Image 1 (spheres, rainbow, N blue to C red):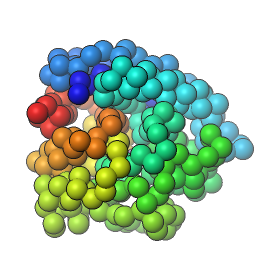
Image 2 (image 1 turned 120 degrees about the vertical axis):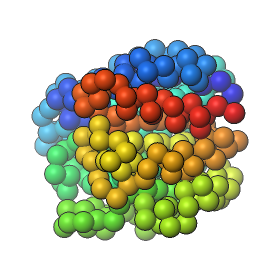
Image 3 (image 1 turned 45 degrees about the vertical axis):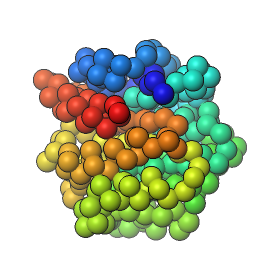
Length: 281
Ligand SMILES: [Mn+2]
């Protein structure tokens, strides 16, 4: 099935951080050509209101809702054309928009350096990217009046064990029905094996989400919230390839390249290299 690239330049800080410029940077690095993907254009996903909404605790709550609806419309249109969406962020908040468009019962392979399981009160920043997985599973701000993913259909992969009280509080919020494969487990069992097992575990259609901060900061320093103890590029390729080639795959999103910290584009090119290797058959 052919890919269609959709830009979702959603930076949930509302402060115009480098994540906003990642879709452009990844296009400049040849993403669409390397995947021989169709062009779905840019969605209206910008957040420029940095105020934390008192009701939800979420920065730019109304704009986040609007951006998520725009992302949902884009994903639905690509799927209606019989293509696979590749949604390029921006940050992980975009995932809420993606799941608004997906059928109930869809699974989620969630590869991220963090669980993204804060809520409007416990998030230190108020950024949607602290809360996306909790919003999706019904444990965060209730943006769309319903949970969008069943917790038992989520696989949380590559996050680091907590290293301070804030991290421990977030880890304690993670729904116990979500099976977890933290970074040390992935390394210990082997990324290729974990990828194969995830692809084989279940029959439902699934979405693959890649927060690039699942990589170790020595491999990819160009992220806003670097987290030590992550995967290297070989691990990432080995983990993603069986998922990207699975018949169950509905689409993919890529988040959290901070293009401002990649002035010569070398990290964007590396991301494109890994994606094109994993996604092309
Ligand atoms: Mn994330």
